[in-house]
Length: 138
Image 1 (tube, rainbow, N blue to C red):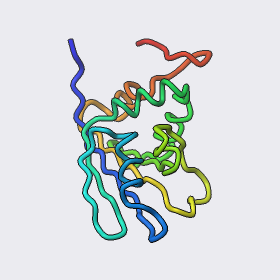
Image 2 (cartoon, rainbow, N blue to C red):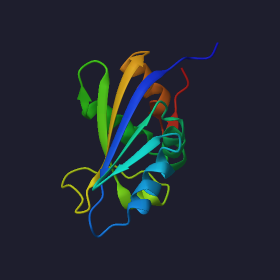
Image 3 (tube, helix red, strand yellow):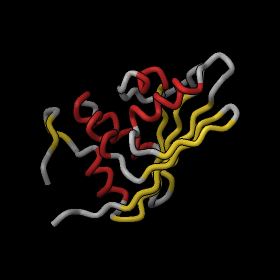
Image 4 (cartoon, rainbow, N blue to C red):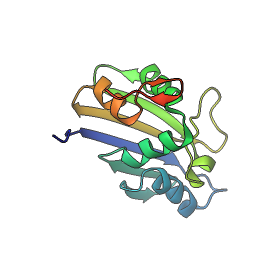
């Protein structure tokens, strides 16, 4: 049986005068290739309904525990979590969570609302728990 996931992903990133809008759009598209992007003056907004490619990047970079810490550490209620990514890393098709002081060029802000299943089950799907650095199969 295939699991059904219903999620809404909202992505926003500022575009400063010193930046090329297309590069910021590419940074978002590299990490969230299925996102629908909308450019406006000084900002790019995007929506998606999957974090599959993002999950693949987390697995490839072997940063599942870091991701889980960010997701659970930035939880908003029972169904939402947020995180921020560095634009330059995203432009290079890499995940680098932005923690601490905000990046001077701003960051890619991501808000994930999980409708189905539970937030915990979805996080386990995107960034499963690990043991000795390897994902634990349920």
